[in-house]
Image (tube, rainbow, N blue to C red; front, side, top):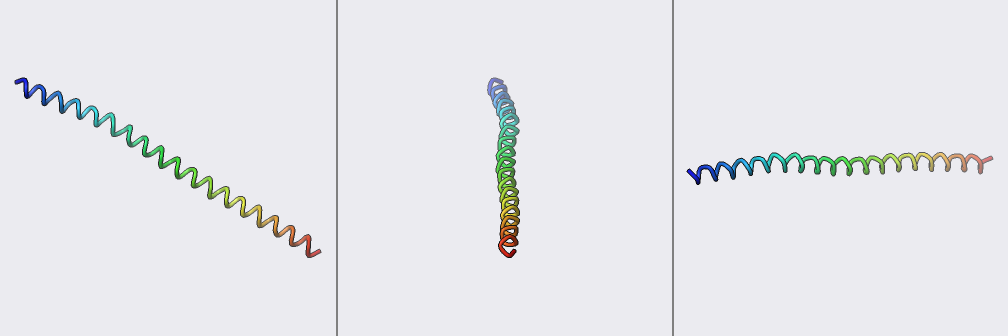
Length: 67
């Protein structure tokens, strides 16, 4: 009897822990992935904007020099 109750308790506790730990893990992993993707996106966007501005500046300077 005691063994059955104990093993039942252990399985219940383990199941509860897994249910609690798994969503937390998933949340942490998703947050990490989102942060990585966002920072990469920001970097790409900033690089693109920087390139566009640089190209525009170069073109303006070139046209100014050609005059």
